[in-house]
Every structure is written in structure tokens, then in C-alpha cells.
Length: 180
Image (cartoon, rainbow, N blue to C red):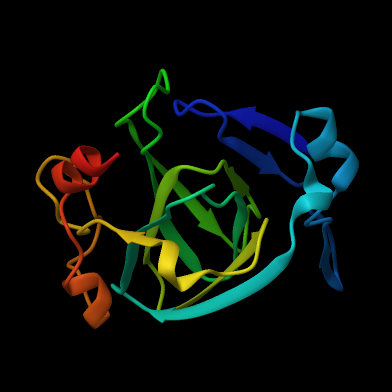
């Protein structure tokens, strides 16, 4: 498994090596030792979650207040356009937007440090995204910024499809930054 850095400080892209043959494939999707070798306490990841989305669906931009939430994200089925925004005041990459393609062919995983906003758009008819999170969900700490916030100018590749009521009511980047 290779590990690459990103334009956002602390974000890592884990690139598994699928072994393919006439039966299909096998790949390692999680390895504590590799994470630790790159400064991530993978043993601290405490909860797994999964979402399924139809083509065009946007989920996000979500984050967490308080101590934040670190997570390892991957597309288990289909493909997504994944987006991260550094919302950590004082970070050298504060305000940076980074995009990634996650799919069930390349098996890339993103390590998302605490303090980032995360969202994605389903690129295929159906896309399953798995999240390995470092602490249990605390709804009172949820943060959300509108997917179409003009200050973020996220280049969603498809027309935006279904959006949850929570995401439709999300605030602005400026309001979040002013609250930090």
C-alpha cells in the first residue's frame, strides 16, 4: 500500500494494491501499521458507518465542532467526487478545497484529520461510501456548510441531485469562519 499526501495539511491518500486474477480481486483496505508509520493512530478509529447514494446526490459539506472528528473514507461500491475543506483556524492550508475521486476500482482511501469539512457527490447510479471514524457521533457538534457556497466554489462535476433537508438548510462558509 502506498501513501500520498495532499494539498491540505494532514490529509493522506492510502492507495491499496489490488491483486487481480480470473476469480476477481483481493486488496487490503485497512492496515494499522501503515497508518502509524505515517503518523496516524489507526487504532483510535472507533466507529464504522456507510451511506448509499444515487447518481448526482451531494452529501455535505459536513464537519464537527469540539474536538472535531478524524476519519478514513473510501468508496466500497461505485464512484464519488470527494471534497475536503480545511476549516482549522491557524492551519497553513486553512480554507483550501481539495477534491479526489474515490471508487471501487482504484480503492483509494482518504485519511481526513479532525477539523476538516467533508462531502461528496455520487458519480455512478449507486455509490456506497464507508467511513471509519475516531469517535462516536455526537449530533450536537454537527457542522454544515452549503454545498454551493460561493466562497468555496466547489466544482461539482454533475448537476446536483437529491440533497437532505439538513444540507439544504446548511449555513455559509463565512458564518462558520466567523464562529471559529
